[in-house]
Each structure stands twice: as structure tokens, then as C-alpha cells.
Amino acid sequence: MKLTITSPAFASGQRVPKRHTGEGEDLSPALAWVGVPPKTLELALIVDDPDAPPGDWVHWVMYKIPATAVGLAEGRPRTPTLTDPAGAVQGKNSWGTVGYRGPMPPPGHGTHHYHFKVYALDTPLSLGPGSTKAEVLAAMRGHILAEGDLIGTYSR
Image 1 (cartoon, rainbow, N blue to C red):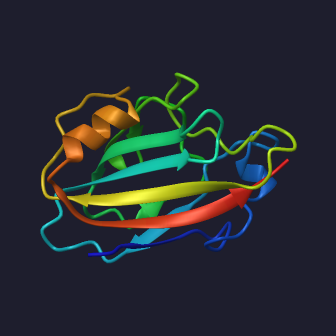
Image 2 (image 1 turned 30 degrees about the vertical axis):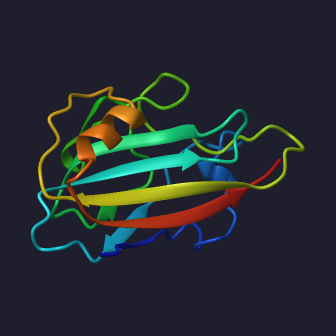
């Protein structure tokens, strides 16, 4: 199944506003999703940039998002645990910190594509705060009911 992910900040395939980048306020954009299957017990979010040298660069990892959540408000704090959405936790990004860090590709490196991926899971993940993208993907293996991908672009 497929989830549909949207943001009031940018349309799929369009430029991420400077406000949500390392050149701006570096605030996480608001996100919304629809199409969560009825048997979903938890949601997870991974934001990465596969165009980054030398390879995939992770901008945000969040999991233990309640299945009833329909999105995320703008500007989620950079804390290991969140109260909105209640119970959600954040993992490590490629900077080695938790929480959202926005686009900031190398100058002149061309347009990068930022994938905001949401996963609907049939089981709660038994991971604490600070897990990496690889750890979250491994824990989700075999438990993904649906997923969706919103792609934003950015260049400097």
C-alpha cells in the first residue's frame, strides 16, 4: 500500500524553502499523510539525501509515532523524545545529533533530492531514542504495511 505525504511548505518535486534549510532557520517542515492502513500500530519517518557525497546523508529519523497521528507540526524540537506527537522518539542524523537538520548541500554540487519517507508498521519498534537509520530500517524489516515518499529539492 502507499501513503500520500504532503507539506504546506513545498509540493512534491519542488524546492524546500530556505526557512527549512541549514541556510535558514533550519526548522522541520510541517508534514501530513493519509492512507494509513487500519492495522498500523506505529509510524516511522526517515529523511535523507541520496545525492550527498560520498553517499546517503540522513537528515531526520523519527519513530514510535502513534498510528493515529496524521502529520507533524512545523519546527519539531531537537530532543530525543517528543510530546507532540506523544511518545515519538528521534534517532541520530548524519551530524550525530537527534532531530531535524535541513538541506545544506555543498555549493555548486547541483540539485539534491530530499526524501521525506513515512512508514506504516504492523508492530511497535523496540528501539530507544538515538537509533540510526540503519537500526530503524533493520527493526522495520518485514513489518512495513505501507510507505510514502515526498521529495523536496535544494541546491546552493
